[in-house]
Each structure stands twice: as C-alpha cells, then as structure tokens.
Length: 305
Image 1 (tube, rainbow, N blue to C red):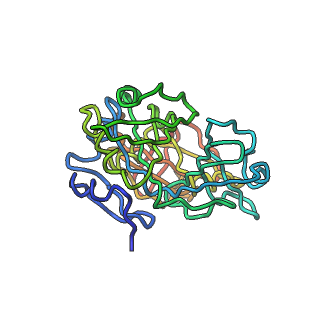
Image 2 (image 1 turned 90 degrees about the vertical axis):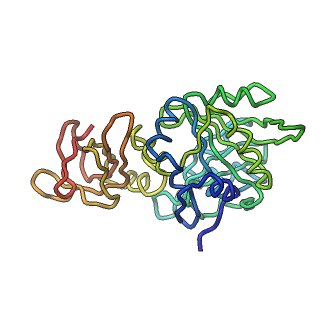
Image 3 (image 1 turned 135 degrees about the vertical axis):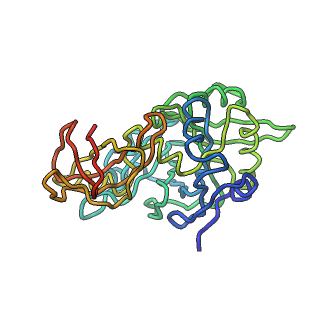
C-alpha cells in the first residue's frame, strides 16, 4: 500500500491527479495539466511536494564516512550541501543523498526520491520531517518576500523563519540551480507542512506542480535522474544520450536502435518539453553517438542532440 506524504490533504483539496510512485502517493498533475505547470515554472514559480524523500540525521565521526562515498563527506564545510553517491561494495552506486553539513559532527541527508537505502549510521527522521521545493524563474523573489533573513546562495543551506498571522514556521532552506531555474528545497516539521505550503501557495506567482511537470523540466534540460541512469552511466561502455522526438514521448525501457536495427541502448526517460515544442528522450547506449545521428525506438525516429 502506497504511503501518503505530509501534503496529502493539500493535494486532495487542489484536486490533483494522484498515483502510487515508488511506494508513495504523489501528484502527477493538477487541473490545467502538466504543460501549464511546466510553463509556469519557466515564467513564475512551481511548488513540488518532496515528501517522498527519506531524511536521515548522522551524528558522529564524519571522516569515517569518506570511503563509503564517491566524494569525501568530511571536506564539506558547515553551511554547505552537496549530492553524494553511496558506493556499493561490488562497484556502482547504491544510493544518492543530498548531504548538508549542519555542524562539526552533524549531517542531514535527504535521499533521492524512491530511495529506501539507509544512510550509514543515520537516524531516520522520515515522518518527523518533510520537504517541498520552489522551482522557477521567480523562486528567489517569492522566497525573499516571505523570509525574515537574506536567502542563501547556491550550494548553501540556511535556517529561515516564516511568519503567518503570528505563527512562526522554521525551515532549513537549501538553495540550488535545477533544470535551468533557481530552486529552494525546504526541510521542516511535518506537522505544519500544509500551513507552510499555504503560505507560499497564496502568492499569485506560485503554482502547484506535479511529477509530470518535474519530468518534463528535467528531460528538457537534459538532466539524468539519480539512480539507474547514473549507475548505468558509470558502468563500462555506457553513454548518456539525449534525442529529439516529434510531439509524443516514448515509453521508458524501450529499446534504442541504430539505422541497421541493432539494439544499442535503452530509453530511461521521455516527456513532451513545452519550451522546445517537441518531445525528448534521455537514454543509455553502449557506444558514443554523435549529434545529428538518427536513432529509432520502434518505428519512431529520434535525432541526437
């Protein structure tokens, strides 16, 4: 049975189309559709539920974690965060976390969506803490209007306080660039998730957005997903490819073939990309493919970008 995020009642109230994704009930899109949500992110600001990300706290010897990750965790300065890949013993990637250095011996780790792998030595705070993300051209403007302090720069986190009718909501705020737009992820007490969401949602610049818009923004920008795409890409002989389709996306998992009909890879993600007025795919191939090469997914052609 799929698990609800802390914002489930908000999604119901906004009449979102819900579906189970990686064990979580998540909004696919809202009335008006994913294309409108995508375009709103490019012109204004979208708000995405991130409650499907497990959150872990680590207290202890941070340097002892370094040999478990692709990049050293102990070199991360307090007030900074970075994406860290947990390595499997036999090679490849076991999990990916966004790791925040909170203090000398204190880390906060937010798992990639759908990842259930425990952070080494970590304390599971899922259910106690939750998250959502503001993403779009006017995200910084929206946050600056609501925050009581200067907003953090990219790659930094900061504790911010938001006041609404004499109620205070505190959140750890991570500042990042994502899919060509400014983004801010908030980590907060799950008990007041709906109230904090509502504080931002009331801003006319903000529009609710679901997983379909998130995928179209990701694929439009050519950004691979954490997990299978990165794991495959680190394996010998695998290459990331982005290609342009017609109006309609193709099904993830479909074979990618060359002009001679040889299977050379798999589609890992595909979506209609409104800003480019076409569909695109991201996939992994067993050889490097030059830009302009025409590939085939069944009887559908795709031109490598």
